[in-house]
Length: 298
Image (cartoon, rainbow, N blue to C red; front, side, top):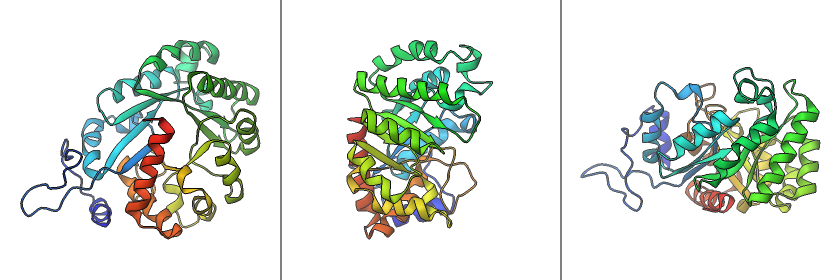
């Protein structure tokens, strides 16, 4: 894993399509073995326009960077359909379908453009996507009080997503930005199977949240110098309930902070948390890989 991190910090990547088959380590005579695929990015946005210029080449390089799996998430009907289409191109990629609270106010979201803000109609139109085995979760959904999203509408929409996840027996991917009280109340009420994405709560709360059946997702934010609270939460969380994510193209870890993120960068996030927990990075990644499989029932 240290070789993998060094390779990333020097800006080198495997050639597109260069990932070795699982179970094989050798790249050829005299060459170091490729890292075994142990990284599972439980929350990404590879349909983002940030990847338009080099999406195919980047995705093809990820197995060579140790990536075993990715869930790419929709934020409205259009991006959920695009996420599913993308997931079908790679056997290690899966999709999640849902409506992000910000889609209620974004002019280019299909929630506004196609459905005129009628999220109920959009969620109904999204329903057939869940018949595909490549769609493994409901989301991204949740609550966001950072932006001026109507509170009543997003609360109703979030609750509808949670109920849909329970009905379909699928995990729900919950976004929580400056909305702890409301999100926590919903978790206590429904006890859904799912993940609190990009966990930003306290170390004190993480225990009961996991006891309710939730996993907690940690991003590259834990590597930031001023990110004491997220790292404390990552240290306090039960190991069997921790999953790793990028939320790419956002929240790249150090030393890539401010740049476009991708799933291979989870190596840095894993090392930071593993060191804080007194674990070897490889052991921590192996544990979070199994956690991701359990979360998504893969």
